[in-house]
Image (cartoon, rainbow, N blue to C red; front, side, top):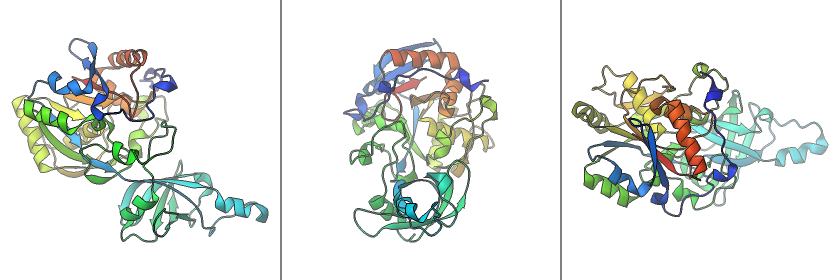
Length: 363
């Protein structure tokens, strides 16, 4: 398969820059795979569109202020001349933390990465409290760096003071106070994600109560969204791409609920592609479909058309970027042509796209 077959045109104005006024006021395009039809709905209609015996699985990961802006301390800085040294040291350095290796030691992406070498120290100022300082201890490709923070005793508290909510690059504005609440789902409990599981952003307590009142069972898991989800596919041959692993944790109660649902023929409805990746990765390490592996693991599964889904029957998801692994994943579930037809309809019908945008239900 060619990556160019998973492309579509999207006018820039269709990319949502702010959340909807109410979480459940988003639109929802409902895709029926059996009839190959789709229909326009509102997300708040979700309870009325389900049978009532579904197992709804959501991601309870919480986004932390993973984007930092700082400057060099100059230990390893070597500007071309003394005249440019002051400007060189004052220039802004952006760091996106992506994965905790151990307390105080993090992988991250640094810009401008080419100029930040091993041994460089970066200081990040905070509105309140002392500044935060980190040293680059190793480097990788495409701006990847490993950073060691000077004070790791309460690093999360320091990041809350110095960090910014890591809005995706297609949201062309700085983060604001509203994003600290609206770029979190109502399920968010466990901090560690650098991006929100955005399909969950549409839920409100009222919609959740209505779903449970109808008989829908709701269970959680945790997958810390990392750069692997958004890593560009750098080859036009789809099959050659390799996914970066992302850490997940599936509670025993969720694994047992999935086993019961599968045994009873009840649909498993994944809220977001992160849930899909966690469940389908865990299923591939289990002894059987009825014995899903609970506990921590790494989501490494790469789903593209032709892949078999072992657990997930239905999917609630936002709209995804062209040529992305997430568009490949939804195409694996519903078929490339059907998905692209639905996307073309959504563009023509002025749906709002991506993280703060509208959603689709694939059933």
